[in-house]
Image (cartoon, rainbow, N blue to C red; front, side, top):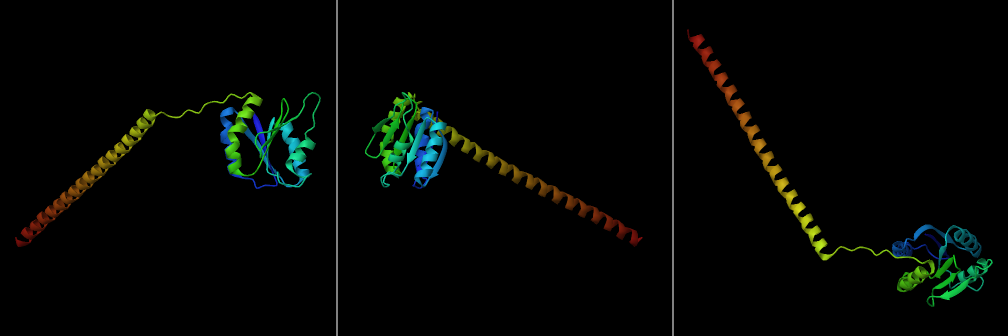
Length: 206
């Protein structure tokens, strides 16, 4: 299920986005869009688009605005009951308000990371109940698996070091062989030159 974020008269904080993304991911909820609104008119437009695109909308900020321009009053005027799809107001905490129907949920939260993080478990549990989410537990490696992985990584490092040592020894051996071959060739050339010089002297002495 997708959800959308609307930042109303607040700075778009990456930490809040990360908190929601990582916290709701095990429930199968994914962020589909995040926008900003700086005026009541923009909030109305963005909210109308968001509720049409996703069943869950978070509105961050705008709680301390004057009457008529606060997020709570704008959401209350914008979201009208349709038929039997009645809207309910539910306070999850003094700072967090949930407006919901049978198929839609709009959460109004402050743009304070500490406050949201402190109440996030309450928020998630209420959404799980509302949308009947089943949270997939995250698998964490056991101490034995961590120990085995660490041993494997360390053994790999040791093998790398041994391989590097052998490679260095081979290089030294090859350099020694090349040096010996060069020396032998030089000695051979010198021997030939000496023989040639002796032949020339013998020929001249005759």
